[in-house]
Each structure stands twice: as structure tokens, then as C-alpha cells.
Image (tube, rainbow, N blue to C red; front, side, top):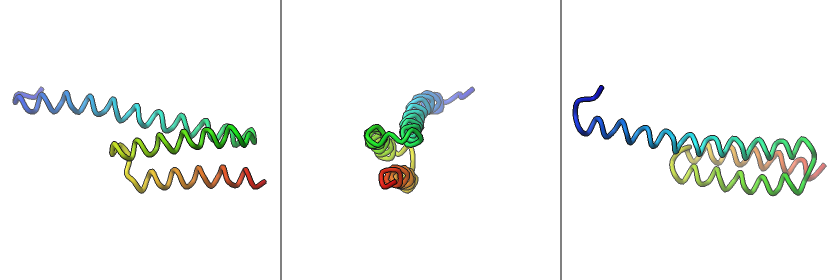
Length: 89
């Protein structure tokens, strides 16, 4: 266990940040899964709605520096490409 006051504080702060980061990650994964399920069902309207939600959540996580901006861009690009390929079919 930490003995210094600032070390104890860092432990508490790190736990709070871990919870926040896990919530961001979970919400991103959920949004992506919902979008992919809509794509699998070939539901264009639902896929587009879920895509907008997923992009919003990915951007928020990138803004909070939970994920890197290039990772966010890659996730958005891949998901958008899947939705667009479904729409053109």
C-alpha cells in the first residue's frame, strides 16, 4: 500500500479514471454491435440511426482521450464502410 499522500491520491484518481474509461469503451462496443446487428438484418434505417449514435460515442471517447484519435477514425471508417456497402446492395 502507498505511504505518501500523493501516491494514495493517485490510486483513487486512477480508479475513477478506470471506471470512466471502461464506461466509454463499453458504450462504444455496444453501439458498434447494435449497428452490426442492424446490418446483418439488412435494416437500412436502423443501421443509419445506430451508425450516428456509434460515431457520436466514438468521438466523445476520443475527445476524452480514452481512445486515440486514429483509433477513433479507423473505427468510424470501418463501420461507415459496412453501412454504406449495405445501402448500395
